[in-house]
Image 1 (cartoon, one colour):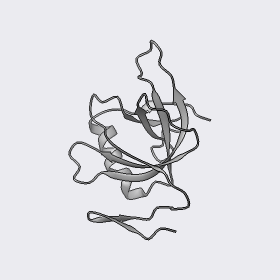
Image 2 (cartoon, helix red, strand yellow):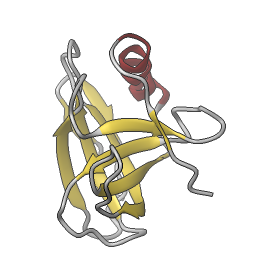
Image 3 (spheres, helix red, strand yellow):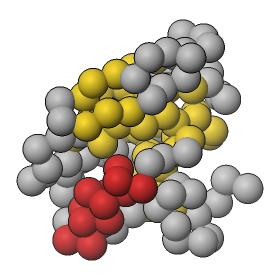
Length: 127
């Protein structure tokens, strides 16, 4: 296990069994990136839609840093790349659906504020 990393005023314990990509994004009212939920509408069981043309390996783990408007610190968590969204003529950009991996409850608070006040999450049925 990797030692606990200091992230400004908070701490997070991250697995270090293998290398992973660091993804540092901002989600706002009109960004291509957004949060998503499934049928349960649980944010903890959901994750982030990452709008990108860059290839990512399905089932790989990434370290996700998400800056949100009005929040001093980014949300930091692990996520798994679970589905690719190819280019189509629909409204959604191409990218990847990332699902949260054991997201800390304290990290959910800023996400809940964001989806309640700024922008509703997308829906994906990944099961």
